[in-house]
Length: 175
Image (cartoon, rainbow, N blue to C red):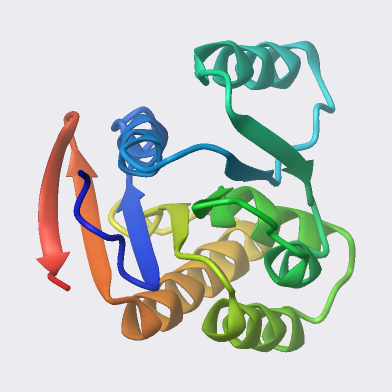
């Protein structure tokens, strides 16, 4: 039997570091069904391909919920029979909020409240975007800063935080 998941797990790392696969493996160690909250929107062919790849990789037993903007509502939705809820990913959600003109601080507060009230364990995937060069434009700098604040807030609330680097999980905060 799998080790019980803590209330909130954050899996963070760079692009293509293995974040999603690691989170999916944590989830599927528990009985199906599992809820996959997808925040991506397919605005171009490359994103259509990425979404298709993620869906194809997932085993039977996943229930996909699309929540590109109202992530808090998706986290609080009924989870009848589900053993875990996986959010993939906070970075795309934040992008959608910012580009959609949403109030980042308000939406972040709503999300943190929802995470605290979730009825099943939550696995949240997010990108670490603050380890590179300073972006050359105001929007990119605002995004990097907002993503850093979001990641820090979720990490403070999380019971378990894993940094993925080169496909390897590094525990930053243990349950």
